[in-house]
Image (tube, rainbow, N blue to C red):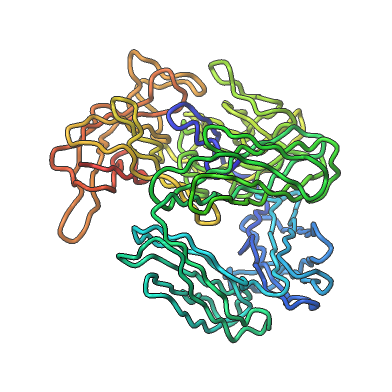
Length: 576
């Protein structure tokens, strides 16, 4: 699934499961990092040794093994020893970069760290190397005349010096990275913007990079600035397709944000693959490029391709890389940290009783994605069953890489375990934490069901969507849909739709706040007309509230819930 994966549930129903119990004595795997790179390496040489520290947060000893997905990576688990970065004894995992035979360019491999008896295992360490260096030969910016900033980045092997030349119409800067002397990757952010009064046109500048031990990184980088008053399309990156051999097709959507003015419209999308035959197809769906991958006949391995999108934007044709990894058929695997809140997809948050979380992983089902078609929700869907503390829970949606489920209203609070079984095959076990409530706001709509606001959702590349949408006036009643507000009065059975009469109300005092607190001002509070489960939906709450007359005005006013149910995330309203 992509960044906005499952975002269609917004004001429908989505489910995910989270359950808690007392944990039995078992090791718990923790890694101090799960991504390395891109590490700059001179062509024809091996890269520097990389170390990832594995900590046991549980009781019985770890028995770790590490296996590489590519021949140029070698991982060796070291004996337990003092580990400064984690403040305890740990097992260092030494990763050798045997890159001398690799061609210039970017290469990515992975290390699978396993222990069959450990909770939160297996875990994957992604390793990226930039053979020949990672300073680009050139940079091209498309800048709106509004003066909004646009950023790009590059990395180097060591701290370098940068010297910028720029035309008077544009501002260009390079932000130096943090990190100590033992870092192996130094990331630089390049920021450009059109200055006030800059006319649409093409302008040129340079960035001189010096001081890297990788000779190819010391260069003068020409920078092209295209200042425009037209739309500027920016694609959201999609994740690598990981599909078991012989499993069903998978689909992701490539979505475009607009950094400029006007509206972006997509004219066409085409796909090309570089190996393995025609395993990918694309089609326009609601203005987005849908990419479908079919693993039929493909052997385990990595496959690459591109999607070319033609739009009316100033930057015209955009090429987006896609990657497919075929893996051997096996048991279902929940990603460590892969049980997330379904409003903002943040990991590591408390799951609430009655909440609808999402589980991310692989091989949950071998068939096509399925939505539950009956109520109360089933505990097995597409062959997959989710267990919290060894008890099955209601499931709403299942695909090979994602399950949406409901945490039972009577789930024990505290730390617990979760796993996914498929057709009787037992999956790995991960740890979760459950609270009575943990509110997260999904979406706000006005009485005409126009979207007023959605939460900011960001992917690993820092690309985000969300924020204020349709403007609203004070005195307007809006409905904010949310998850995680906990048990209600009267209580509702897990997996069942909420009643219309009597309404299922969240107990206690909860208020909606408009505006941000500060030294000279406080947010304006408003008591909602209703806080409870949305009738006829499973696990979906709604907050009906009138925007008060003294609410702050502005294009991006913070709005959040606070009270006995807890403090929610923040939406942004355009209040006029």
